[in-house]
Image (tube, rainbow, N blue to C red; front, side, top):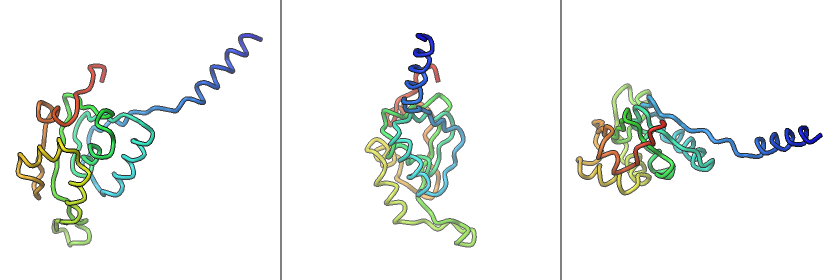
Length: 148
């Protein structure tokens, strides 16, 4: 009886505990800003962690402005890239047409360390500006513990 009770109690504890899942970003070249905002808001609301373990470019970088920085870390393979927002090329006949409004919105999400790095590096432009793992990236977000 005691073993059955212990098993039931353990099962209830496991079921009642919130599931924690880490988001591992390994090869994310970006996409639609609205989709990333919704994705990262869900991660933030569930208090999940984000491990940048590879490429995080374009809209992927919204993670820095939506998920708390203390819930994000970078591995030695991390690389992030920033550029101006632009309209979907499917609607502009394949031509990259920048969006001042979209770029302003991106900037509004970025925390001060990202804005400072961008300011030191010429701001957002049509060209991708990358930060590889190292001191510049660590000024924005902490390196992951060694177990990652």
